[in-house]
Figure 1 (cartoon, rainbow, N blue to C red):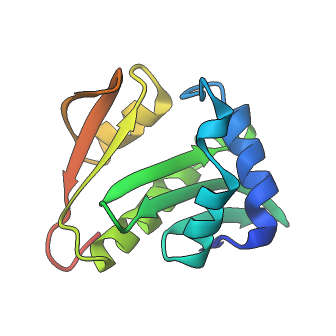
Figure 2: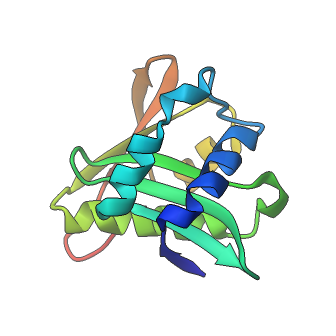
Length: 141
């Protein structure tokens, strides 16, 4: 089930982010505790929890309309968790007034496939990553 992330989830969020095989951080320090605490204090960060275990998380940044993070523990991939978490992050951005949102991801990944299947449009590259955008129609996310 999806729920808003809490302070107690931070360690597991960091563990998931640093354990994935794709879209690995070259510098794990790029995601700081302050970043995660900001998202927890504001709308935007969700976890998928099942059987008492956080299996994935997403974060949408309401300040700039960016999907800041979407990661699922590799052990739970291909179960629809990423799709559900993406929808939650998009809803936060829609609620914040964004009608066109964006994200970046590495090419040739499951994430790229997910975004393409969800209707995201590849518009270019940013910092050696693929840059996708999505129009959010009025009344939906």
